[in-house]
Image (tube, rainbow, N blue to C red; front, top):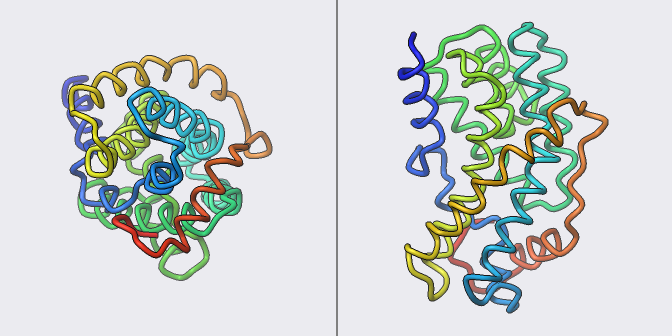
Length: 229
């Protein structure tokens, strides 16, 4: 396949319209707005930047490790990365989001990208031997059609930002012009984020963002919710 084909395949799997359920989650934004943490375009941009930094050092590392493991057909390391991505999420909401989206992505991938690592992983997910988190699913799918790990990481980071900004349009007074300007700025940080974690191992994974974790916990018990937990 040529580079243009791979580019379009990557665009397809990073599209916000991909049917894996991303539109049903706000990644903590709903509580952030209810609690006054996010209230305008500036505070929204800060929230998205914090979320993408956390995603890079946590799920981003798991994705890169799993992507390399898929190319080596090392199922043990793939499953270890899956468990690491699941266990390092401190609150129930983010764990739920990761596995619901991950399993849907895996099911979709099975119909499009038929590789042994993806099939074996999905068998283990269905057998409850692996949790089935989204970054691992994305690593296996992109590895399956020869997208390199660097571009797979970029697609993951884009997905985190676009999920939150899509939710913002439904939750607060902000225009699509403002959200697209924020996304453009956030996208410009991806190269630095990749260079920061590209050689990290599972032992290096970290996601210290206590305010985000508290907001996700608040959302779990919220009486009024537009987005799922």
